Length: 144
Image 1: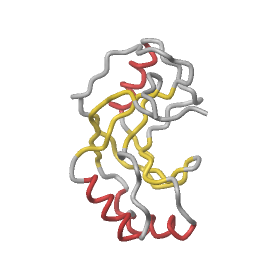
Image 2 (image 1 turned 180 degrees about the vertical axis):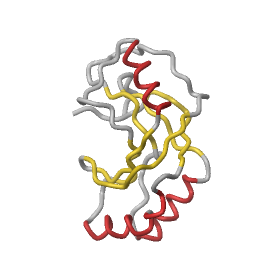
Image 3 (image 1 turned 90 degrees about the vertical axis):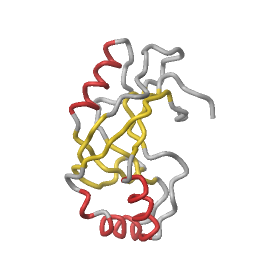
Image 4 (image 1 turned 135 degrees about the vertical axis):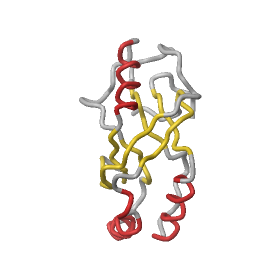
């Protein structure tokens, strides 16, 4: 899939990556085919790079809940750092394609109700945990 200048994300880094993959295996859920990431900007209309990205910057967030959002099972996050970076991207001209910035990290997309129950069981203790994101870059998310 082609690189898209309107999709900016940061990747989960640190030991939590392996912990989450371990929890997915324990729950019997297929491992995702992508990096665990948080989308900072999703602008369907951008065709050129509008911002200088910060691939070395670290962004911290805390897990608030595990829930279904759209077609994904996600950790909802709270983070003044992610919110500030989202605002910075908007200030240079990006227009987020959703009504509001809802910081979250997609865990998986293909799941059954049973898998959601298992995931909620094995990830029950993640509320309040700090996650660290880095590697800010333009992503490859497809646009409908």
